[in-house]
Image (tube, rainbow, N blue to C red; front, side):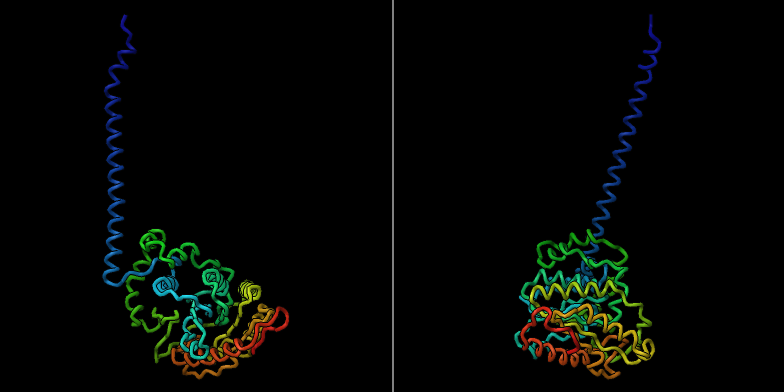
Length: 353
């Protein structure tokens, strides 16, 4: 007797097999199309990078996604400073206000490294300082130049400006830079930065030049001025001062000198936003408390170094001609400190000496 169910199965099997084969072919075509699309996109990406490099419009890898910070890392990779012994840290006022040549003239044995990056809050500047101190054991003196705005808002930004391990490998030239363009790929910032980087590197961007001297300083060379730019400051943040305290304590433990400097501020900014001086007095008190009594020095240049109105391009930044004069005064103070032996812990209180 013929089993009808078996006949039905035999009749259906060719159709089922054909359907499976068709599905397999469609899946393979999908994978091929997907792979072709991905490889094509990667190819176009690499061609775009090579073209940007050839036309001098290629930004640095976006380690921090902040062009100023990333370009400074690129500079340090291409221009390593051997065995620095004097480290400058901070935000843009430290980067743009310190002239390494002035330090060397006044302190002949100095080998300065400007490790300041623009746009950093105090906790981030301390992160960078710790990174550079670990990289450069030859550093014996750290100078932090800051304005009060650097000590607001630390609570909302991470300490880590970039990955230390990636930055170390990049600066040591142990790794090709091309892989970092993939790891830190950000199409919007890549396009935006590519439109401006060539002019910034050539110094043709008046307010945002990315030009460095041999020490890593960033001169702001202009005869023009702009509005104050900086308005009412936020409340001072204890997290910022806690970070400063940890750096001061580390330097004391390691027997390294530390000088904290409050940069000059535009008189009109102070008249408008702190007419009674309470905000700046509080800033002073917190700085001194953070430095403790371990021998760190505090120079309030805003009070002790008279800067004419023409020195400022905005509320906090000095044009390079004024920054050079400021650096001469800073260098003299640093020289006086170097001529004195390091104080033992607890024997010298931080002050405006």
